[in-house]
Length: 256
Image (cartoon, rainbow, N blue to C red; front, side, top):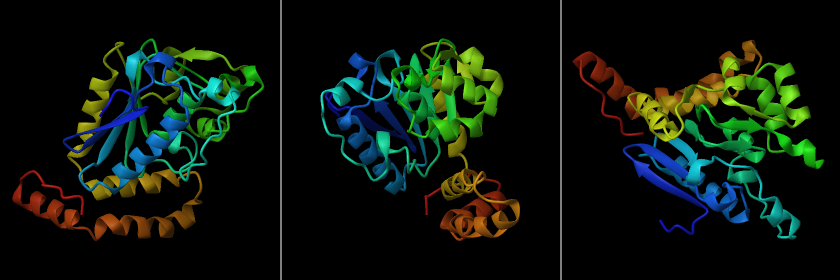
């Protein structure tokens, strides 16, 4: 991978590590980064040897959102199949963990909201400051945030446009871990590895069913979950999981 790439992908023993790589501008997302992220998400989803992903920013910040200077210059954004940031509309199908150092604001915070778990540095900063520029947070923040924290708190964050620290958010359960600055990637990788001991098709199916939790009524959920679950229940890994249990050994997952 070259340092000129706006987003990079590295694969480590079943974990895909995504790096937002525009540290000189606090990893704000320009057209090139969004396209790169979409390509990366596609690659991870199709790779049977990648079961979990971690996303982080280079240079001590996660992301300060969209590149407003690029937008002001008149550069036309590519309309992406997965939506803004290459993943807002259609997030990764596999578990995705954010490792947040420094700022995660605007679209950067909305990127966190597409993730399934968040490991944050104690000095990390979060917020949706769009209203301060008479903009609207249309990257999913206005409907995803109230699903993750109490409505009144989400309303305050969105309509004041203030920046909040990890201590403010931690009591609301949106942060899985709060760690020392500089240790987020290490801790996110540890969390990712704790998932890897489990069946990969079951991980993906469980994520998909849980992502529908706010859409389905409970009675319909019983039927709706089964076609998704069957992908895992009919897989080779299910057979391997049962054999490993019976033999009292660690399973060897294939992703099939």
